[in-house]
Image (cartoon, rainbow, N blue to C red; front, side):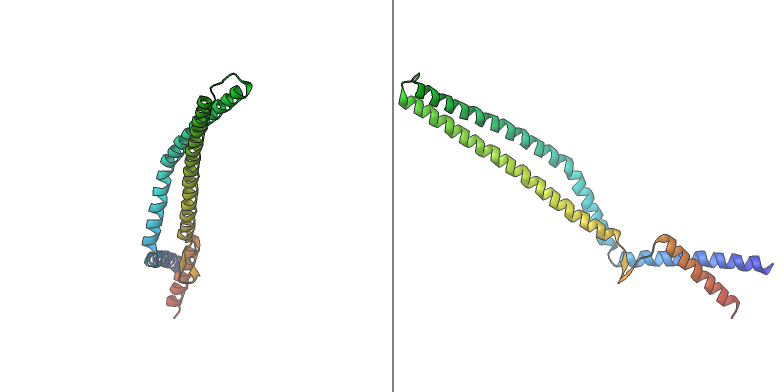
Length: 177
């Protein structure tokens, strides 16, 4: 009858030791950066929450860019049509035609500049978000890597096995000393 009691003692002491080892690793992990990990996770969640709004803003910029580019193309087409009319002799008021051409070309240039600015803002926003997401991802990878000083943290299964073996060895040693 002493064998089952001894086995029960080994199992109980092993489970207690496994719990103590797991709790110890958790406390050491919290001591060496647990608060930083929580801040990193919170910052990542905030970045993810911003993504839909940034996507909508970039979509509005793209629509404005397309609209402005269409207006620039129309102004450019008007200037070209006026040039053709002047060359074919259908418009004889040269000074007025040249003013209209200059106005249309000027409008096209301004509208192209606005389209370019919208495109650049969209690209800068996307690049900034990509850089920020890459930074957050690198921080998250560091959160997922557990190290106590220079030793990597064991998994929960390995912690249990180490604790169970340690508890069993301690119980055996106490039984046979």
